[in-house]
Length: 117
Ligand SMILES: Nc1nc2c(c(=O)[nH]1)N=C([C@H](O)[C@@H](O)CO)CN2
Image 1 (cartoon, rainbow, N blue to C red):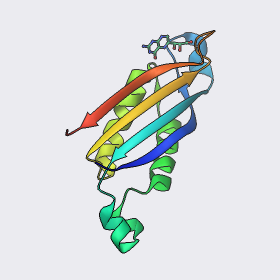
Image 2: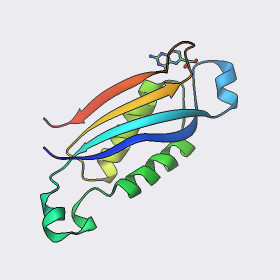
Image 3: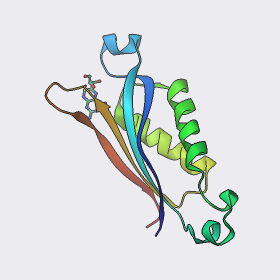
Image 4: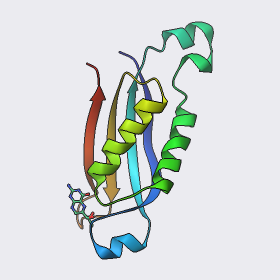
């Protein structure tokens, strides 16, 4: 299967389990692999026939603005659901990293894959 990629997309959102984390925005870094057949778009050279990574990136920014989750797990699961409802994505892999959350770790986070095999 082909993939449309979005790598190291940074969004700021309220996220965290501790009281102090409810009072500020923190940065998340996202990587997405969106499974789709790119051949129709390539044959017609037509953006309408593929997943528009610019539109999806903008939607992710809106999502981050609109929600205040405690866990990165919840952010990942709810974002995957939203993207699969709003765009024609057969299967997606989503990595959500929270840089700086743990001292001495470059980042921590989760990776999920959703959709049909
Ligand atoms: N599996 C997880 N562990 C932790 C999370 C999380 O979202 N998922 N969050 C925190 C805190 O919010 C932490 O990021 C603050 O530094 C701790 N563990």
